[in-house]
Length: 162
Image (cartoon, rainbow, N blue to C red; front, top):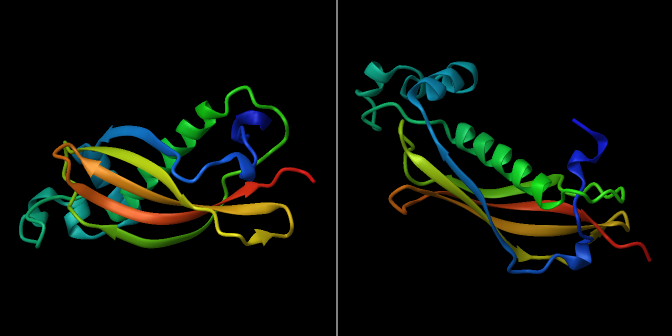
């Protein structure tokens, strides 16, 4: 990983409310769900396909945190590509708050999810005189068009020098 791989292309002031990105799609496999569950979410409905049949989910499901981890991987990859070639020293993108993180529909093996992000607000608060907050709504839809997960996240963006 190079020093420039986390740079972003715009100052806080340049990022418009309403900007929308689709980070990509991802298909969950049973083996991956089991491995993630065994490491990070050891409930039977994340780790044992047979025992999961006797749970409220009626089968193996991906952990909410597994879905979030895939969102993070796709978001970072998308934003790194978006900022490719920018080498001016800005380092935007640190998340400072997540709210209303809801998994609405179980994710099963073979489900393909699509991950999106829309900037919904830029609160006036400036942190330490040099970073503004970008608030975004993030939504994840399955292959049937059902909203699977949604959350709001606040991300820091560097303000333009005065």
